[in-house]
Amino acid sequence: MPRRLANLLLLGSVAVLGLSGLLPWLLPESVAGPLYVLHRIAGIGLVLSLGWKYAIARGSLRRRLAPARRDLTLAIGALASIALALTLVIGVAWTAGLVSFDRPIAYSALNLHVLIGGALILLVLIHAALRWERRPPAARLVGRRAVLRLLGLGAVAVVVTAALDGVALARRFTGSRHAGSFTANAFPLTIWNFDSVPVIDGRAWRLAVTGAVRSPQAIGYDELAAFARRDFDAVIDCTGGWWSEQRWSGIGLADLVAASAPTEGASRVTVVSVTGHRWSFGVDEIGPALLATHVGGEMLSAGHGYPLRLIFPGRRGFQWIKWVERIELT
Image (cartoon, rainbow, N blue to C red; front, top):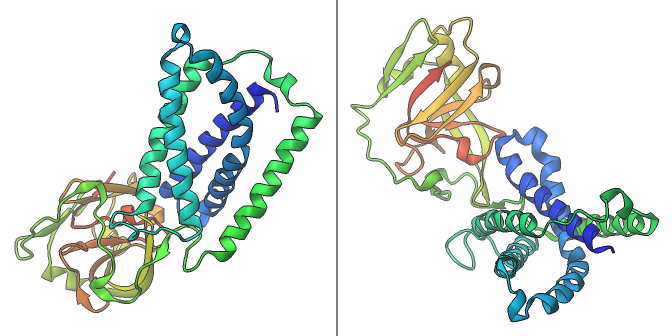
């Protein structure tokens, strides 16, 4: 494999891994599924292509380890290699079920994978900027032999990914592992953005509906009973690497918005937590969303979002805003 083509392949693989790892968090599960598969295939493909990079790096190190030729790229390359090794080991171990969100340590191995992967992308970009090659032109690199090698690499990556997916137990297509369904408040507790659990006086708490509405509201906890009650089962899939199905009870977000008489120009609904964490949705998307007061027949615990938590089937857990205090229409 030509040196520049191998380097471009690795750079492209890292870019695909970064985008396919993060974009699905933002997208509904109904459209994000193929990206999760692409992420696993790209990861296996990167592992398989490291042999070409090893041959390139070995020759380069021999030239640049001389005292007169040492430069910053050696340090950047070494850090990137360490980050790459850790990211790949954790990713493959997660796929094979050797590590999980609660083992071998209490902190999720998937979170470590994401954090180290983010550092890897930054290091690779710096390394590429310092060592970028312009010759030979990229079009001249893709000959018949190179195309066959790339096709072979892709085919093997697909087969290995399918094999690993076949032995994965209790794992959703997102990669998350099962964590106790229908257990009311006993399912795992994860707090987005390092927020601490706020202390909220339910008697003083009010849910405000503001913005592009004709009837702004400030609703007390007991006044939520005036709205139609909804109950359904939904899966929460946390980006920390676990999923759990629970029965949720509360009021429809769309019902609350309709009761506030949105103006004709209103197009976005933003759900805001007392911590400041927020997420925005299109007005036409909120039909399935629930503002829950109970889970599994129990009042939400403080850690799980009391007094009110957004439940949005098909969206990742960090969009299920806890401790809701305000609904803003724009």
